[in-house]
Image (cartoon, rainbow over all chains, first blue to last red; front, side, top):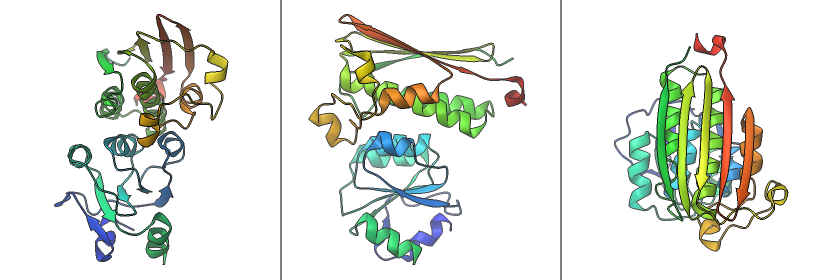
Length: 108
Length: 145
């Protein structure tokens, strides 16, 4: 899968448009809302799904070489998070769906 | 032999917006030097966990990064209040994080454990005056290409 493939879902919205690297590979899915735990389990090119909506999610995503982040359950994103996602080149999506529903949707 | 990198950063208490600058800096620098991805990952984990620890548990402090002669040394030094029981603090799952830290996704109690696992050398001393954490990573000639 590549990041561009996520754009076809109505339930998932890309927030930092236009995003420069839509052809970037997405290799796996991971979800966890404890950042230290996520740091020891995230793999490069993962799609990281979380309800945490703060700038530290982007810091962790960048350090772990994640391809994209989806903020689930309709959580709102603040301007610091968006700015950091733009600066670090992380594709940032939001969705009203839960993490479980997102995984089912993407894996279907 | 790797060229010298020498940089320091400040970490303010409870400033979660800016904590992480040192980790992102060293990640970028190591990527420029073509250090293997898995090594960069370990350095990133150790540095970030330590920066966040400083932000959420201390009165603030500094992060000193030195890369010289194939050794990356990062020293985290804060102004207190210190760790009363280091062995307890190192236990997986043990956390004294505030509600503020937990609301932001921290406080899993894995910080010191992750740092020690990720680094080649790990030294931690603490008193009421402050805590000093030193981590080292060794790069060998093959990594330099």
